[in-house]
Image (cartoon, rainbow, N blue to C red; front, side, top):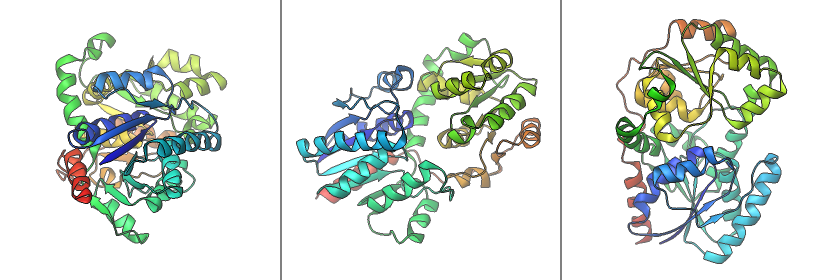
Length: 355
């Protein structure tokens, strides 16, 4: 089967790593990078570190408004679909790259496979939520990470072509934890040991584009007595500078550039608490059994909250402080996201469909 796979952002590189290494055993894959994450630290390093083959095409879209970015991706992807005439187009997650792929396949005679289908935060103000919904309704093959995701699709009338394979991120994390434990020197580089620090990430517009929310988050982190390691997304640095908060962040937090995937997994595994507004990092904290304090009012990964290991705090200073002082602890050994073999199950399902 001829497959065209579309990626554009850090989490998608990691998901594609899991699927591509299985896919290329029996199928032909063309890998397309939209260029949505254009910074080398957020893009090239992941291809190198994970051993993902260099993309066959890089659209080089870069940073633009959501509408302009998506439109330019669609134009580039349409040309590639015409050129290669794939049997299936694979897309991942919930970014603008995902939506662009979905719309192109809806207008072309090519099947769409969505990896990580069925997630819902039930907050339509999030651009990612609309990307998820629209992509799922355009998809022919939907690979879900959990039974909850299957239920979400069924509630919207989507029952055909749904396969609950588990979470591909679990596959990648199991690999990265083993690799990182052998090769990462990030703790030595930063001069920290296990459970001596908090690990924090903030990148969602809901937090970074609101000066009040961003300042509250920074102040809450700064008030904690433990060191705070803060890998800063380029867009977060931009907002810190714009709001005159960069000096405050640099004085109170250990601000570092984004790190590679192996180093980041080791940083997560060694943290006493993870503080984040990222959906993927909530889940990785769950996999690693590290308490997670989530700077959002909702989550597309409710199982992490139900386990007791994740708490939603928004940007409320008192709630953040209480949660850091008394971190959530998981009380469940359940594995709602599969057994770490999602990549194999995806390719097995695809092979059966092609017979």
